[in-house]
Image 1 (tube, rainbow, N blue to C red):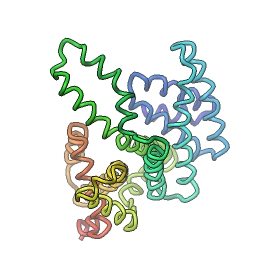
Image 2: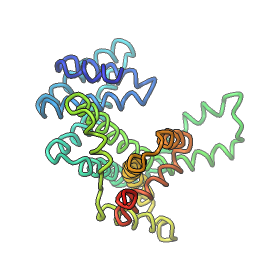
Image 3: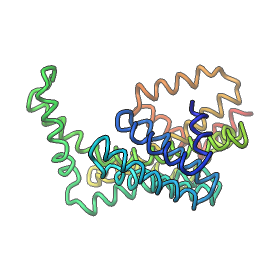
Length: 302
C-alpha cells in the first residue's frame, strides 16, 4: 500500500497533489497520516525538483481548501497545514536535495523547532499562561465527563503542568513531522529508483559533535538549579532529544545489522517507543549524543 502511494504520486503533479490533500484530510481523524502527506512532498521535490514541489504544494492547497470547505465548512484548515507542515517540510527537502545529507536536513528540522520556541517567547509575555487559557475549554469539557477521576484542585494542577510542557511538545512535534517526512520521502525515492540504498544511508547517519555538545550543555543546564530560570532551555531540549533520538535509532539499526541480530530486537524497540515514548526518546537521544564520541557502530563492527 505504501509503495502504491509512492508510485501513484510520481505519475504527475495532480496525482501527487490529490494524494497530499486526501492524506491530510484523513489526518484530521488519524494524525499519523500527515507524515505520509509530508513524505509525498519530499518524494516529489527530490524526484522532480523544487519547481515541481512548489507546483504540487500549491495544487494540494487548492484541492484541500475545496475539500475542507465542502465537507467540513472550514476553509482555513488548508492554511494551517500549509504553514505548519507543508512549507517547513518543503524547505527541509530543499536542504536535503542541495546538500545530499540527511544529517544536515535533520539539524535544520531541529532548528525549525527551536525557532518555534524562541518565537513563542518573543511574541507572548507568558507562553505557559497562553497555553493554559487555550486549553481551559478542553479541560472543562473533560472535567464534565462522568468517568473523570480528578477533583477540581487536581484538574487545575494537571492543566498547569500540561501548559508548562506544551511549547516544547509542539516544537518537538514540528521537528518530528519534518524528520519523519524526510525519512519516508527519501525511503520512497530510494525504493523506487535505487532499492536498498536508504537503509545504508540511514545507518551511516552522523549528526556531528557540535550539535551533540550543544545538546549535552542544554541537558546539563536543565538539571541544575540554573535551568529553572530558563524555561525555554527545557523546551529546546525536547527538540534536541527528538533529533538525536533519530541518531540513536540509526545506531541501533546499524548494530543489529552488523551483529546479524534478529529483527525482533528492532520490533521490540519500536513497540517500546510507542508504549514508553518519553523514556525511549530520552534513552535513544542519549545514545545518539554519546555516539559522536564513543562510536558504538565502529566498536560493534570490530
